[in-house]
Length: 136
Ligand SMILES: [Cu+2]
Figure 1 (cartoon, rainbow, N blue to C red):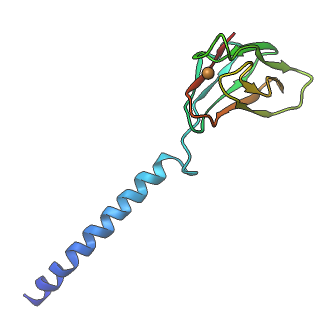
Figure 2: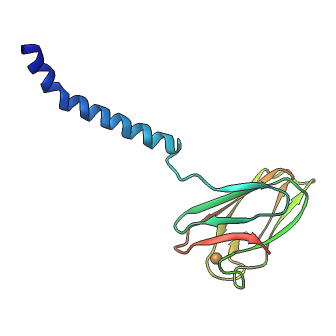
Figure 3: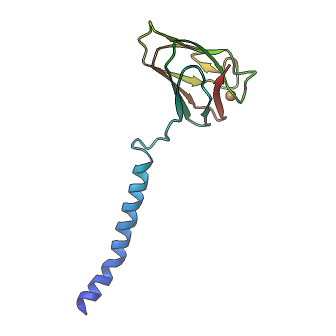
């Protein structure tokens, strides 16, 4: 009987430990850094529509074919336009970061970047407005 009473006292503590453990497991399974996973893709010249959520959203694309890929914002296509990624066999640049400037022309900085074949561009949107990256 005494053992049962003692066990009952520890049940709430056991419940709390289990809940904290489950919560920590769920948090860790999202991703290791705690940052949202950056959507993206890879391929030749078709970017699709890379989302750039407001307030720090980002997307990346790995360019596997040499050439020039012109792009613009899919949400503000007439304003945020005239940007490009040059994919060059002669380049040694593995990856480049491009920031969204805002709803202005060209809207991305740097506007023109060069990476090697297989190089990656990551776009980051620190503005308060949602943007995207689409082919020009
Ligand atoms: Cu935009």
